[in-house]
Length: 119
Image 1 (cartoon, rainbow, N blue to C red):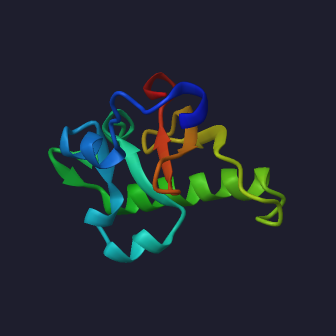
Image 2 (cartoon, rainbow, N blue to C red):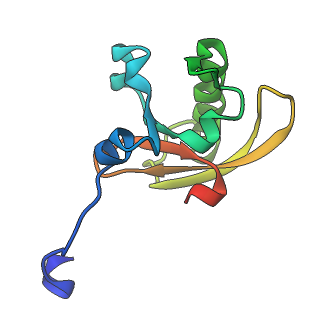
Image 3 (cartoon, rainbow, N blue to C red):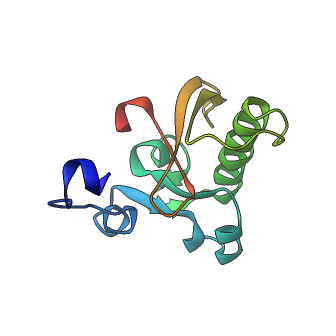
């Protein structure tokens, strides 16, 4: 892309967004999760029952990761197809309400889970 548009004027990394409080880095909960598909969840989504009074609700967060994995698994023919860079699907929030989410690959090759308005 640099050949077409030239050098980027500015970049904003996921790590910077986590430092700014826009994204939550899930490896804060368990460093072993760095080996998985996901790295970040938007704070807007975290506030839907995954973060309570500044405490991470780990069972709910794990459920979000499982539901997100199922979305990718189903869309990629059981992980047989080459992974895409964007997925969307519906999950059940901790409140029981259905919610559409987007799952987008970030610059480090991991996925960020977000609400549609965060995209």
